Amino acid sequence: MRDAVRKFCARIGSDPLLVQGAGGNVSWKEGNTLWVKASGTWLADAERNDIFVPVDLRKPDGVLDDAGAGRVGEGGDGPAPRPSIEAGLHAIVPRTVVAHLHAVEALAVLVRIGAQDELAAKLDDRISWELVEYHQPGAKLAAAVRRALRRRPSADVIFLRNHGLVVAGHSVDAVETTLAAVVSALKHDVACEKARCERAAPGGPPPGRLPASEEISLPGYAEIEDGEIQNIVHDPDLYRRLSDAWALYPDHVVFLGAEAHVFDSRDHAAGFCRTRRPLLIFIRSDGVFAARGFDAAKRAQLRCYYDVLVRQRPEDVQVELAEREVDALVNWGAEHYRRTRARRPPAGALQGDVAASAGGVRWR
Ligand SMILES: [Zn+2]
Image (cartoon, rainbow, N blue to C red):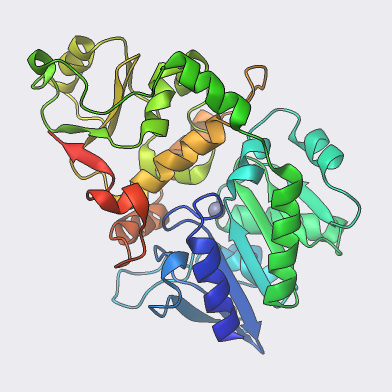
C-alpha cells in the first residue's frame, strides 16, 4: 500500500491543477495506524522523501473525537514532524485511502454562489457526494465532515465549500478513478477566458517592459515571471476580483495574506511601500510584483489563485471568507508551522518557470 500511495502522491503532486506546493494531504490506514502526510511537506516529494507519519487511532488524545482532532498537528516544536492539520479528517473517514486536495476544477466551483446546484447539475449518479459549508481546517472541519458522512455514509467525495474536496476509497486505484471522474465532470474550458485576457493585454505582458526611468521605483520587489499571472492586472474582470474576491480559500489566505494590495500606479505603490511591505503588489495595467522572500510555496498559491480566477465567467459571483474566518487562519499557530515548513521546495520537484529563478520571480 505504501508504495502505491507514494506513487499516487508523486503523480498528483506534479499537477498544479490538483496540488499546489505543500497543500493537500493523503493518508492510508493499516490496522490501528493512520499514515498521513506530515504538515508542511510536499506531496510531489512522496517518492524521494518519507513524508508520512503514523498516528495511533486508539489514543484518546488522538484523532477519533472532535475535540481530539484539533490537537493533532498542534503540538510542541520538537524535531519530530507533525501530522497534517487535517489528520482528524482523515481518521474519521471510514475508507482505507483518503485524499484531501485543493483541486482547481473543484475549487473554482466551490468558491461560487450556487455551488451546490452546480455540483448537482454536473455530477452524475455514479459519484456519491456531499457538500459541507466552510469550516476552519482542523477539528471544526473534521466534525463537519463527520456530520456529512452521517447524512450520506456512502459518500466517496466530500466537497468542502471555499476549500477543496476529500476523495475516499478502499484502494489507491478507487480514489484515483473517482478523482479523475470529478475533475472531468467539473472541468472548465478556460479557452474563452484566456482569449479575453489576451485581448486585454495583446501579445501578453512581457516582464521587464517598463521604461528605465521606473526601474528603481519598487526596490526590493521583482516582477512575477509568469505571463499568465500578469494577466490578473491587465484583464479588467480579473483585476476587479482582487478587491472583491481575494480571500476565497484557506491556503490562499495562509500563504498570500488576508488582502490584496492593489494600486493604480507605481508611484502610488512606491508611496505605500515606504512604510509597509506587502508580500505582493498588484499595479493596474502594469504588473504583479513580489517582495524578496516570495518562495516557491507562495508562488504555487499565486498560480492557483490565477487558475481559479480564470475559471470564473464575468457573471459568476464568488463568496469570500468572512473576516473572522480570515482572522482565524492568519493568527493560527498550526498554520504558521505549516507555512514555515513549506518554504523549501523539494529538490528537483519543480518544473518549468517555477524552478527557473528561485520562486519564479526575477529580481531587479
Ligand atoms: Zn485543505
